[in-house]
Image (cartoon, rainbow, N blue to C red):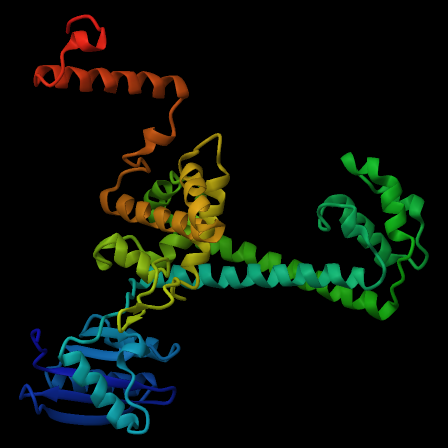
Length: 421
């Protein structure tokens, strides 16, 4: 058994109150002090004072929604706070209440059985709030795009089958015209076409012929347009704030942008999730497991069950998968990940190969943020090298190997019909 914590506190947090249990004394049967506190700022200050009066500098609580955050804000800097995943501190069903849960968390914590969740510093947490909110708005904008397009589809407009982008310049002009007019003039729709779409004039005329939208349906489309424009405006505001928040991390952002597939936006998203201090994770393997890119372990009675990747990394994993997709498409500029992807894909399939590339990218990020070096894997030349140079290096390696064998007396140079060395 590892070293126990002599004085610690387990906290069961709820929306309106929390129950705290301070455990002290004997190893097997500790003494308990329990107290009930509200979650208002004044009550949380009283809770902090109660901890300090009892010389308790170690606190553990489970991450229940966002209710733990106000407690963390008050205790941060005064005591060591460990936030635990609920699956590690769940009590036995049928024999639990708030007081028992608090004591159970404290007992597990004092024995060193509760792994701490990663909580970054306040500046990174604030940046994370904005990047996650931006992600939600982008998802909402995509939903509005689909809703806008479907509104025209149900009114017999098949323009999406002709144009590649329903939100391009020509398509937008035609859509706005259809919303403003009562009778559709195909010739006017053709006049709105620009660039290569002029070659598809006949297909555009055919697409708008059966269009029929009532006034109420048009009003709904205008509401969708307004919401779409407002989301764009809000995303622009968030981008301005993020630009201000990441000013002190420009060095790390530039470092991550050297990885194939990662642009500035993805670099900011990744930094907002993992921070800049890699010592918090200990190793790249732990970081990959925390991000949900490592296979699970589910084995019992000698039988290995499902080893799918975990559901962790709700925001980080999609960003890394997006970077992986971009990296494997970068054939001319940087074929490093593309070659690895193709090799894995032949054995394991496309989806597993993408996850493998995402894990490679995260492993590279861990090494780069730890050492401060740009992306330069040790086997880069093996994959990213002109064919002529590869041939020359292969011949040079063969000659070096032959010289070594001759010097050891293993072979004679004349056996290979080569001039003496």
